[in-house]
Length: 245
Length: 291
Image (tube, rainbow over all chains, first blue to last red; front, side, top):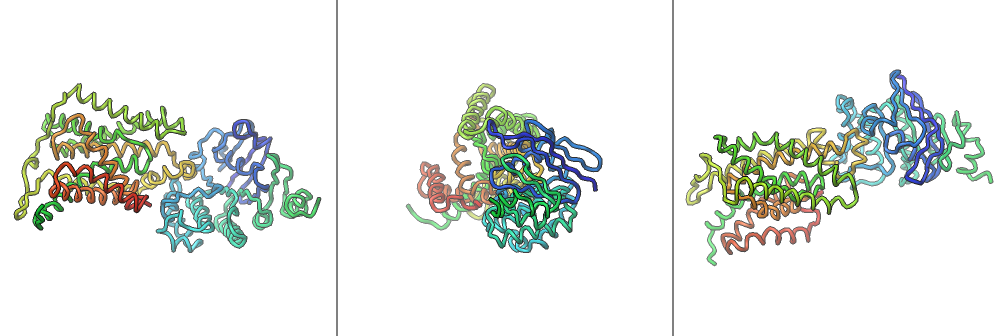
C-alpha cells in the first residue's frame, strides 16, 4: 500500500496573522509521525491545510495513493475525505444532539466506507465497549474521555488510509490520555494505519510515534528521525522536560 | 356551559383528526426550520401555492391527492432552487443570516400571495373528490371523510420521513448539518448540498400538504396567514426537528383547540396554540421531544 503525504514549504494563516512559515513535513505508509509543539505554534493549522480547511498561501500539499498524486490544495474537504483521509479534529466536533450510533454511522458517509460499515462498527464496539453500552445515548451527554473515544471511532468508521489526530489529550485526565494513546497504537497495529498526530504531551506522543517534528512559532525547528533522537535533543529538553536552561 | 360526555368525546375524536392535519401541514417546516435552522416563514405560502396547483390539476380531472403526489417532484426542484438562491444571496454571507433570512422569506411570501391574487383573484377555490363533502357515521358522530384522508396522509408522511432521516446516510446527514457543518465536511458530506437536498424534500412535502389544505377546505391567497402561527407553534412545541414530536404536538394542538372550540366558542381557539406554546416552553424549553 503506497501512501505518501508531503507538505512542502507551507505558508498559511488567518488573514493578517501567519501561523506557518515555510513548513515541510512528510508522512509515508505505515508510519506514525508526531507533530510536537505547545499551544499556538501552528500544529492545528498544519492539519487543517492537509484537510483543505485552511488554504496555504504558498507551498504544496500532495497525497500519493497507489502511484497517483493528488494536489490537496485544489480539493475540497469532502473530496479529501473521500480519498481516504480522516481527521479527529481538535475539540472532537461530535454531533452532540445525535446518538453515539448516529455519530458512528455518519463517520461511514463516504461511499467507499459504506460497504465496510458492519465490520467497522463491530470493530469499534469491540474496541470501545463503553460506546456499545451507550450507543443510544446522545453524544453531547457523555464525559470528555468517552467523547474522545467516539471521535476516534467515528474517524475509523470511514476506513481511512491516513488518520490525522489533532491533540487527542486535550481536556483529558492523565490516565485517560494514556489509555487513549494506547488505543491509537493498538488501532494502528491492527489496521496498518498511517497516522499523523499533533500533540503537546511529549511523553505520551513518543510512546507511539516512529519519528517526529518539533514545531515552534510556525516553523519546524527540529526533525527527529527516531524517537531516541527526539528524546536526546536539547530543544526538547528545553521545551518539554525543563532540564536545560 | 353544560358538560356532556358525548360532546367531549366528539371534540376529542375531531381533535385527533384536526391534529393529524396540523401535523401534516407542519412537517415540511419541521425539516426546514427544525432541522436546517432556516427561518422559513414562507412555508405556509408555499403550501397555499401547492393548494392552487392542486386546484389547477383538478381542472384536468386529477384527484387532489394524486395531484399532490404528482406535484412533489417539481416542488422538490423548486425547493432546491429557492434554497440555492437563499444560500448564494444571504446565508453564504454569514453572521446575521437569521434576521436577513426572515426578510428573504417574507418577501417570497408576499410574491406568492400577490402572484396568486393576480392569477386567480381573491375568491375562494375548492377541489372536488368523492371523499369531499361526505361523512362517516359512527353512532351519533359524523366524521368528515376529508379529515380521515388527511389523517392517513399525515401518518404516511410522518413514517416515511422518520425512516428516511434515521435509515439513510443522507437522512442522518440532514439531522447533523445544523449542529456542525465543519464536522459534517470531515465526514465527507457537503453541507450546502445536504441542506439544498433537505429543503427540496421539505418543499415536496409541502406540495402534498397543500393538497391536504384544499381537501379540508376552500383556499384563498391569504390563507397562509392562518397557518403561519400554528405551524411554527407545532414545530417549536414538538422540539425542533423531531418528526414524532411534530405528530404529538399537532395532536395536542388539535385536541385542545377542538375542546375549546366546542365548549367556549370559536374565538378562543386560535389563542390556544400560543397559550400552549408558552406553557410548554416555560416547563420544557427544548420542546416536548427536543433533544
